[in-house]
Structures are given as structure tokens and as C-alpha cells.
Amino acid sequence: QITLKESGPTLVKPTQTLTLTCSFSGFSLTTPGVRVGWIRQPPGKALEWLALIIWDDDKRYSPSLKSRLTITKDTSKNQVVLTMTNMDPVDTATYYCAQYSAMEGGGNFAYWGQGTLVTVSS
Amino acid sequence: QSVLTQPPSVSGAPGQRVTISCTGSSSSIGAGYDVHWYQQLPGAAPKLIIYGNINRPSGVPDRFSGSKSGTSASLAITGLQIEDEADYYCQSFDTDLSAWVFGGGTKLTVL
Image (cartoon, each protein chain N blue to C red):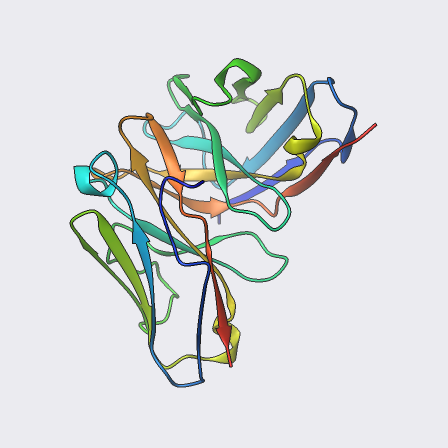
């Protein structure tokens, strides 16, 4: 059974750096082909893909947020960490991690965590 | 403004059929990338209900079906049930952006 769960601060101040952890079970990021991504959703708004890390440590970032994002993995702990610098109130959102399922025509996010709401406010 | 365009809302009575469109471009759906669909119930995380344009994960009722043509895709829901009331999102990949992209979401109301 595949499960993912996000953890991190619920409140951050503007200009601070956000660090979120995705803890997962039921699969390993050492297995060829496995990938984990981060997606966010501002209140009442649409989903937005942020970053993806691949089993071989290759990484992909949203072009619009690339300068602010870093994604890393700790295979010994079955965790993926996302950091986002220079937080702003517009970054207030529920942040999800999800296991990515690769397909020849472009993959999908097959399994999702419950999400964690992060509010940016002074 | 989302890369994939969906209608903000659709509605239907119980038992009826509704469709939700998802329009992309020549660099996303039109480039041959698959479309996937997610259902997000109120207060819950998204759930994959259609992958690879037409396929249903195990456990998803066959009332849900997907199709793709050209630069667009559609999700059809037949035999509408009250519990289908949710937000629905399409997702694909855009080669110009080198990014996975989502639609703006469609709110389904079951009258």
C-alpha cells in the first residue's frame, strides 16, 4: 500500500524559507523509474506543479518558480524535502506531495498525500 | 491563467450525463502528450480517476470515461450521483514549458 504524508510549518513569515517534508511508504526512491513530485493549491484555486525528483537524483522544476525551489531526497528515511525561499503571501496554499507514474505519453500523479496548508503572513 | 482550459462549472441532475472539456495547445495535448483526470472532493486531496486519456484505475466506476482528440480532451460522467459533486482537473505535459500542467478545474454540481 502506497502512502505519502506531508509535514512542515503551518505558518511562515514573508521572506522566510519554507521547508516541507514528504514521508512515504510502499515504494522506494532507489527503484528505477520511481519519481515523487510536489504540487500546490492556493485556497479556492487550481493545482500547480512545483517540482519533481527522480530515482537517479535528476530533478525538474516549474520554470516560473525554479529560482526559489530545491527538491532533495533521503532514501534511507524514505523522504523527499522541498524548500522554497523568499516566501510571500501569494504562496499561501495547500502543498501536496505525490508519487508520479511515468507513461510513454507523459505521466500522472497516481498517489497523493493529504496535503498541508501553509499560510504566509507576518 | 492555466495552460489547460476547462469550463469553471458544469451541472446535471442525478442520472444524467455530463462532459467536461480540457483544451490545450500544440505544445501540450496536441503534441501527443496524454491527458489525465483527477477528482477532488471537498476538503480532500485530488484522486486520479482517468490516466492515459482513457484508462480507469482500479476501483473507479465505469461511469467515468475519458477521450482525447487533437488539442482537446474530455471527461464524461454518466448516471450522475450526488457523490460525484466535486472539482475535476485535467493534467498533461507542456513541452515548451518543460512542465507538468493542470487545468483550471471544473466544479461539478449535481442538482
